[in-house]
Structures are given as structure tokens and as C-alpha cells.
Length: 116
Image 1 (spheres, rainbow, N blue to C red):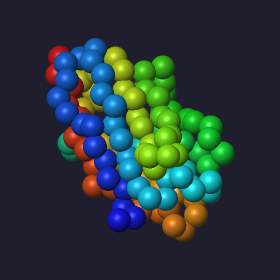
Image 2 (cartoon, rainbow, N blue to C red):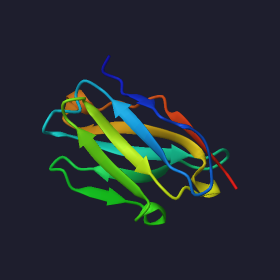
Image 3 (cartoon, helix red, strand yellow):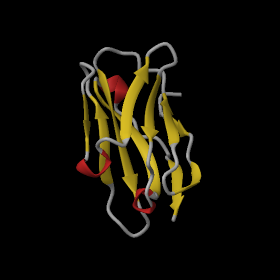
Image 4 (cartoon, rainbow, N blue to C red):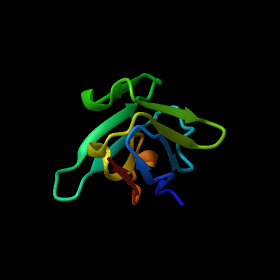
């Protein structure tokens, strides 16, 4: 299975936390990076966070200081730790590999719902 599989979504109250996982057999490759995106109902897809090929990270301004992207090479998994969740974080979250051609796949997504 080369397509990444996301998990960890769910329903939480505002202020709560969730940790999303993106698992794929190519995540341990040195020349693969991972993006997390989200898409709320009726809205365009939004880029959320990036784990770059050399390990540095980047975030959209609205999640800086609240979300953290990280990688577990042994588990072939990238995580998105989401703290201090807000209702506006409600969306379908999906991950995407980039870089080497062996990494360029999208997942199906996992739903995150934050209630006020």
C-alpha cells in the first residue's frame, strides 16, 4: 500500500487535542517530505503544515504554536499534534507525500470536528 493512511481524527471540544497519523511505506525515505492539508465543508483546501525533506518544518499562520508536525522513521509515520483546537479547525485532514516519485501519493483523509 503506497497510498498514505490517515488516522486519529475525531470529535473534541474547543481547547482539546488530537494527534493525527499519516502512515505510508515511503515515509522513511530521505528524499520524501509530507504536507498536511485540510478542507472544511464548502471551502477550498488549505495547506496546514509541512515536514521538509531535510527535516525542517513549516506551518500556516493560523496553527503556529498550536500544531506540531513530526516523523517517526521506524514507524513510517508522520504525526500532526494538534493542541488548543478551535471550531475553525474543523475539517477533513489529509496528508500528501512530495519529493521523490515514490512518495507522491495522497491519502483519503480523517475528519476532525471541534465543538464550541
